[in-house]
Length: 479
Image (tube, rainbow, N blue to C red; front, side, top):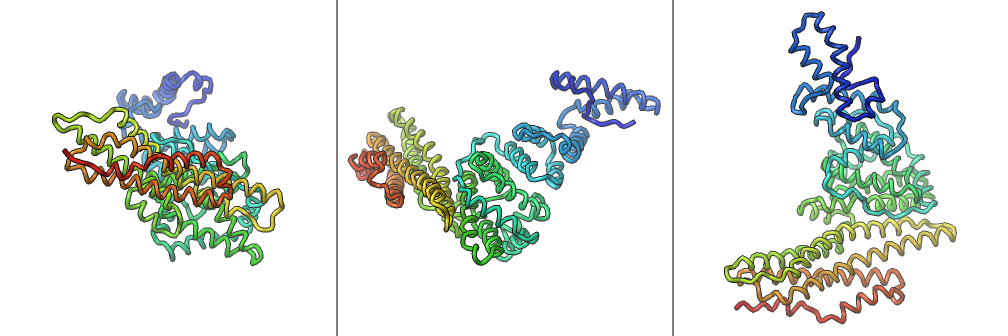
């Protein structure tokens, strides 16, 4: 007679709620186990302990209970789950997440070593990501849409790759970037197969109606990957290795088109992955990412970072100055606007990375020798991302200038010892505004619609017509 912990052959009891299920399970295990153990001469305490363990009715701190929980979860993942044939993606992610959170780190490591098909691996990545950062927004950034010509070329070139593709990628990484090679040599890659499965999964989600799933998988990969050591500075080497290996395996006639298609693919991934990594990386990691052979993060995100730090310095100066005996607190509406501006500017960092990656993807995604309809679709997508790439820096410039103007009436509050910090904050905002306005100008020019972009014209005119606050803001007289 076999005894299975945590299993109950009564589906109707499962529907009545977890507590009822636990009670029924415990009763069933007692009925099955007690006679066997009593006949073997076991005492009542030992029998009660076995019954408790088998019914999974104990504390998570109980080591024996956790071992049984781990074993049950691993058996479920390896044996039960593949046979359940659950077609609802969301339900499958929920089920995997509930299983994942029950397991110990040791069991999770073993779970990663199990064999999963591409759709199941997709769900597992989302489940792991949900557990990694439950406090972070689960909504991914938007990725650019692929034309049918680009999607077809990606799939065709992928299908023609030899079985040695992933090994070639790893060999190239071993030569070019040992840190990334070591990162990807972790158990999760599992003899190179999981990398191939994940890319295959992405390539199956290139139609416009499937792109939300593409975005969710990319976001989950970024979240789970960051928890496993993935950083923005690693993306350049990964992109270069994959694109070069795929391109080298293409025919000479198609090599240029294949290269463009895969550049577009990776920048589409980057539009979702890079903003998250940028927001989670430490300062030194952001500097390392900026130095790589990848134009992300570029001047736009760094202008927003400068603006965030500028606002924070002004806030700090006002907050500390208010602690001085006899000092007046700065107006609450000013402090509220500073806090709001800091939050919006933090959003702009991620949005600028997203916009620029999307723009690069839409540019690379313009296939040579395409039909007129395809060309029009590609141009529409490109202009959409050009507009976004102009919208974000314009917002940074507006927030920087507006925040500085709002703080003019507060400069008399500043302590003498904080004058340098106040001036530094003001100058950071000014620099951020100047960089951002230049980026707006460049992107509007590239759109070829500068004269027709009435909404941009009005907002730019508003900035031009406003008296610049910069000189007045740094002219701090300490009484």
